Length: 391
Image (tube, rainbow, N blue to C red; front, side, top):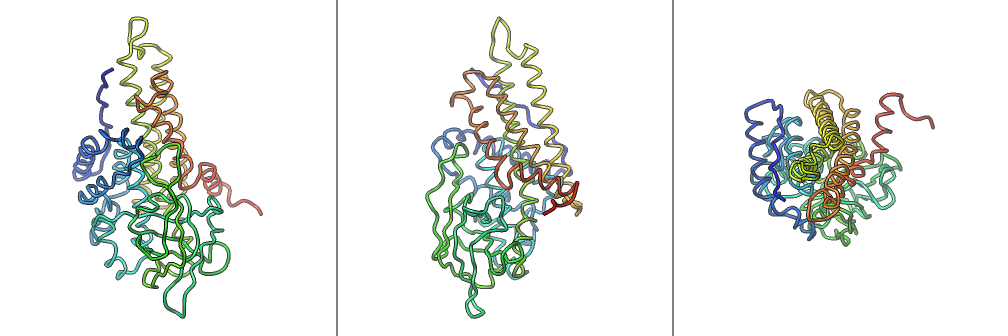
């Protein structure tokens, strides 16, 4: 059954430069990413050459300063780039979001000397990053992490522990690692920039996942990894605050990726429904199905508006943590609903790997979990509304 080409999303962009950027991203997505996405996801292949292309095209450092090789784009634009990439293949969109998250601690809290030394290669030199906060026994309760960094005689730090659920684990060129340098709880955590080839650093076998099979997720073992103090990011004990600040922005990245997946699922459903005929007419002519499509489109537009509202607050230097949590919650729940409905619209074909709807549905699920489960997002939102929980 022939596919009808989806209509590009009608975006409100602030500048001509931003419009040209979206056109470039769409061209790369259509030529270099989407055609092989299904085959490569099925094979579990990570497209490192695509990330090299994105780096060469200036797309791996979009929200960061031009002084160090970034694109100096507002989050309003950067997130719409992520959406376009995720619609073509979530492994790519999510990968760019994680790389941006991993670069945040250095870009926002590093010294000028650290930034000049490391950021150009991270933002435009072909390097790929990973973010290491979670551990086997501390996921949602990230402040209870056990990985330790001990300083030897005022010199190098020696890091020992295990990180878990690390996107790009084993293939990243650098890791932003949160480790305990002091007391229990959030005030005893410090951030470090660890090279991917550091001695004592080793990945476990990647997890076997329901979806997102092309994106490696693995535990990371640090067995006495030596890091000079010049790779400590921010002050001692500041790491948890840095991690939470990074996650506020990272949640917007997940929200944008979720809308990208949902949009791709809607496009597939519309294409199928307008081509598939039953009882002598396209199934898109049946009111029950038309209403499903209308609800899917409305939920997607609402999610896009929500993440853009949060992005514009961030760009204006205003508080946006509550809106970021709302966007992550709403957009990922929307992706789950929309992809499930897309499978239903395609019927039996939707349940087969011959059509992309089942892959979108499997991929949408993980977005409700990563970078703070949606239950955690509800806790964050409630704290903004009613204050912290009583102990």
